[in-house]
Length: 362
Image 1 (cartoon, helix red, strand yellow):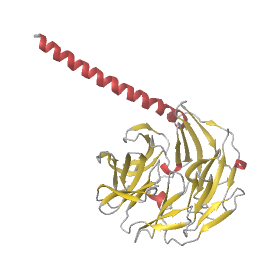
Image 2: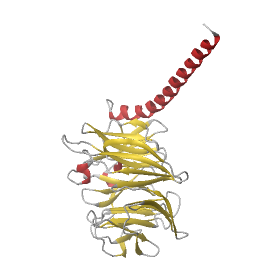
Image 3: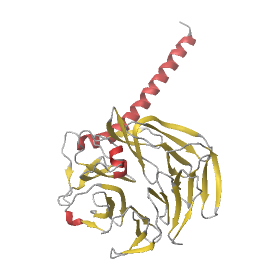
Image 4: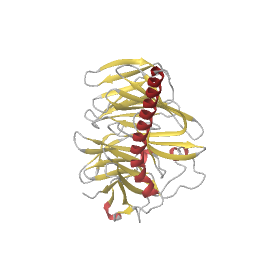
């Protein structure tokens, strides 16, 4: 055998060994995260922290549609089903700051500092988008052909998709820039880093959905997830990780993924992504204690045809640990939209549409 053939064989072996080593490193990293959830939500009992219902506070007596935190004045704001915007004072009494009616309010998106929100209403017949400015206390409409929006995670900018293009409006300079030609209809936008916007189609248990990454510098569009049933996503504020729900043969699965759509951990529990909050190396999740057979996720959750009794968990990815931080005994809780605020965990309770706070241990 000639020396050239020896070199080719050796080079081939090196490539194979390199691939095996890379796979090993990835699997080892994944298993570290996986072991947390398997031990706690698999065969072993979780560590239970004693947290009494007395540490749970209902902040609003009236029903809310959604809420947010304004980092500029360190206050909580909420919007009700009619579109009325209120600020919560220190004694938890609401102060209405705008009472304009929004018909068939569907969703809101909050700016990085909480000083503005975008709202979609007149949904689904004639979806309309407007911006509410807390400082000015007024609404300003977005173009009538707007289909989806996302706030920058680091600046006073809003990306919006119309029927032809993806655009970005800078509220500081009051200028709008066209990013690229893009034709989509029912989609979600998530601006996860200064240079990256994620675009996903709307998933259901019967209809597959996909996820793409848009590089704002190169204008390249990269597919990340292709045609998965029941796809639902929730991203960390810094875009470092996402919680993903999808279904296989109509069975739901929950996992943690990186910004490229790669699975970091396949959880052994099932919950909706909107029931989780990723905060640096901690994941707070409200997890249903039981999901009845025949429940269609995410569809039944969106349609409000199913409600859950949740238990609150904290997963610490750095320490490879997890525990129950709250197991309601006297209060029915179906939590959605979790946020941290002054050492409390805020959430909307879908049972009564109230805003609640849970005191966390130091």
